[in-house]
Image 1: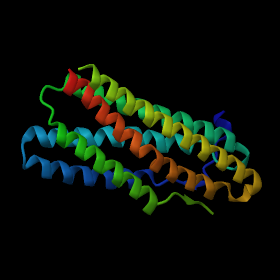
Image 2: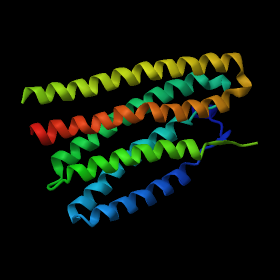
Image 3: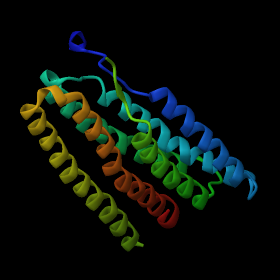
Image 4: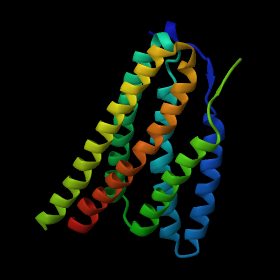
Length: 130
Length: 75
């Protein structure tokens, strides 16, 4: 199956990850002013978005081109399902395993990262290589 | 307390339903348009990927709130 792989489009995964991590560190630092638990929770909340989303972006571009579009679409469906499942698992793990969670910091940073991630994908688009 | 679980189930269930319908439409349109214009496949896939990100955003926030309800508010 991997023999059919083609690298036609350059997916700026690295750029997205770097910008997301910078924004996450800034947000966590701002929450750190509130308390140490809030800063830590904000960082974890951002990571809960960043990790499944990076997997989704990586998996969506496994297959490209018109001949493999069926595989690409099925991969996108699977990647989206796994992304949501991973998010649920990470949230459940944080709420059960972490001792002191600052709920508002965690959820607010997660929501902001979702918005920023979507905007980033719109602003820095994958470029077809020619 | 049961109402919290019902609320969480509704959030996750309706979010999944909306995302499922959206992804079904998106994937169907992507396949349809790629069959019509195969030379545009890469651009269409990129646009579908961006739309998939937008589509996923609301259910993901819903999952976060539902998990908060289940494990913090009810637990």
